[in-house]
Image 1 (cartoon, rainbow, N blue to C red):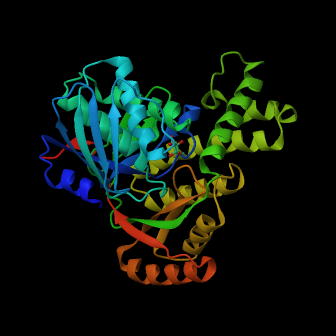
Image 2 (cartoon, rainbow, N blue to C red; image 1 turned 60 degrees about the vertical axis):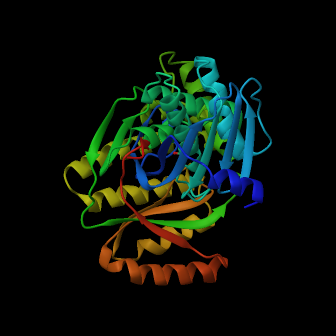
Length: 381
Ligand code: GLA
């Protein structure tokens, strides 16, 4: 840390500390922006924000411990930056300024426990934690769902990823020991008990983050919108893939390229899998739940094509292993983590084997952690 930054951090007396968690998603990938179903929850790893007002009208200093960089902002002049992490912050300030002018000068220190590019949504944690903290210290009167929505818009406008609602929703709304079954169309949601007993949730981080990720993400979204456009020319009531059944899609098979057909087919099937998975959880049928996770991965790999060799290797490796009942890539894809349901007796042995095999194959260190469903963004007690 440089001397100037060290001095700021050392003397910092926060008036508010916010914990903003990352998230996992058990099933329902690339369904959120298609108005479909997802099953995420927040985790016990988080970004910690320390806030204080500084009595100025418009001057803000935000220190990122991850980058050891200080970002200074004039609230009267918020514009996009060429640094991605800054745009999450600037985007949130810009969105809040469209709603209220109550934010005044503040200082903030951000310390993250979330690996970047790991598919556990450090970006939503950053956006939502900032918005949540500012809402508290300046009494902005925003509801939790306002915070979710403005954080999502910040990502669209300042970062340029046309993300769905899942990450921000789970970062803010999650409850301890539960997963959320979220209908992204109506935003109706149900908290489902998620002990997964005796299984543990193991994340394996490929430690790759292919730079295709954000451009391909937006391309997938456009492909889905293209299918909707074609189908709605005959069915004007159809506004998203959510409303399209497999039979309806088949009617248009000759008008769609194979790529478009595969994308839509995947989304229709994945929405069905989420609903089946929630039933399996309700019935305590974890083996069936795990099977659906594998099916989800194969759809993402072959139909939606957002996986990568490193993720596929990890899922393949787990499939022959008795102690693991479900495994899949998680998040936008092209790198990041797999999520695995593993028996506790198998963890040590499996990790030794898979880390060695992964290193041999890709010459990359595989990292791992066990996590638990945890509560969403909150004020430090
Ligand atoms: C990213 C996006 C989410 C969601 C996932 C894929 O994490 O931010 O909105 O689309 O990818 O399921």
